[in-house]
Image 1 (cartoon, helix red, strand yellow):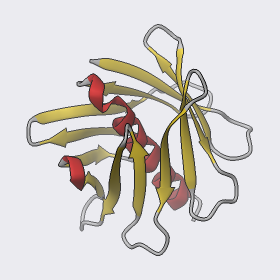
Image 2 (cartoon, one colour):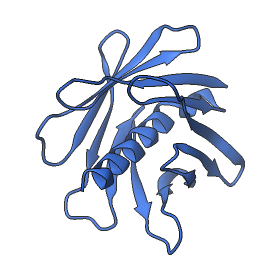
Image 3 (cartoon, one colour):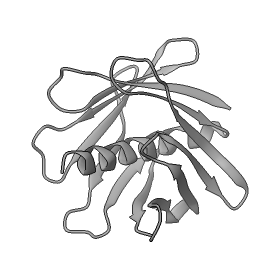
Length: 158
């Protein structure tokens, strides 16, 4: 099991996050391209090597993001329901559900919980805790968190 802490940078142009391990070490950096179409994020490891790319698929409804991470390409799709939205990663059989506005949700598959996300309150800027049950799912789960944050930011900004 791995716990990561994702801290959004405030007062920066574009979207930037630093991802810390349990010991406080910097594990990943996330940077959103400014003024890019489609909306694109790059994730680098602590050494500065790009390890994942997230790109919103233009003209898709509902919203879809293409993710390339760990040599695996997946699509994270927002599902529209009558009550609450949910997200899926069909290639992995993942379903993402919960209270997205309060930043409390789970990623599950047929075997159970893959990861949980919770908001870290009383911080300056957004901060999240990502708990991933299997170390092999860390990068894709992080990408899912970034996609959901981007969807929430888009809906909050009109």
